[in-house]
Length: 380
Image 1 (spheres, rainbow, N blue to C red):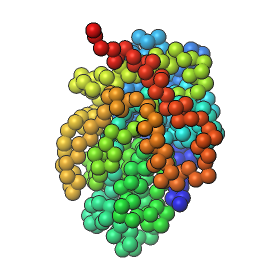
Image 2: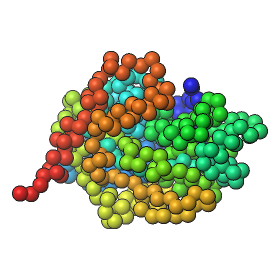
Image 3: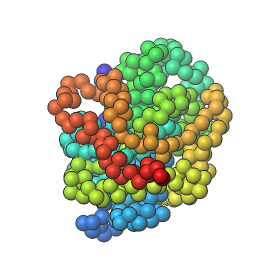
Image 4: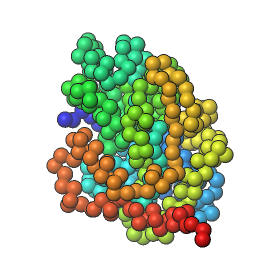
């Protein structure tokens, strides 16, 4: 089964080479933010403009990284293929990344093999599956009605759904959602890889019929009237591992102490994001053009534990969890959960997972413990 087009490499490489194309679809011409004249001490941290990059952005903008003795250059990238490639070629020390990329990089799945690891998982929840208004009005409200549509459709092309990356949990959730209805990618539908920020515009243009992505892009499509949310994290896999603070193995080897401080500062920012004041600050910061560049009300809606009614979708709680031991700790159980979904998606065919690093070498619970030990001390 191979339902993917290589949209991530094709589209993202063209963006950087074609500023007019980027402007037309609403992306800024400068994809690297605050790069400046970087010294050898500066840590290069990549991120993709999504709500769940908030801990890294907040830690940078509020001076937390400086308080922990770190000099940071944030590198804004259009999508996960760029993050993957820059990690593979040593252009980033660490990155906001889908947890599955840690395995893809270590095993060289579609990329130059590069040792990397995570000692801190950034968030959980706030994923959703949306379909076009046209598809919804044709009667598609769940996987079963989608299966009926795939059989009865007389469209010129197969129904097409977008995901941010092959190794993202969004891909796994989409397959998990469709599988009980007997929908088979490559036969009944097509799955393509798109940068998250392009999904609402591609849905509106009719290039895709639905997508699974994180916030704020489900909310954006719904508010523009082009999309309808059919399923969300509580229907897919509550408290699943989502994004990681991914670190290059060479960075951990050469600058272990700085890596620990990076985790500590990011964890403190994540704790602040669980407060009303922290989320209010994040709304103001993330809405700036060099981060998400979206309306603050949209970001606030995506960050808040609120309920809203979407036609046919019922009540939609879209609560991101940034700080919780069960969310942030990179355990073997979470790693095995990911591996199981990768196998089910056919991504590990022919891969000898025992030949590479151990799971405990990739999901570094020991680094999490070292960085957060003070947070779990109990007063005598």
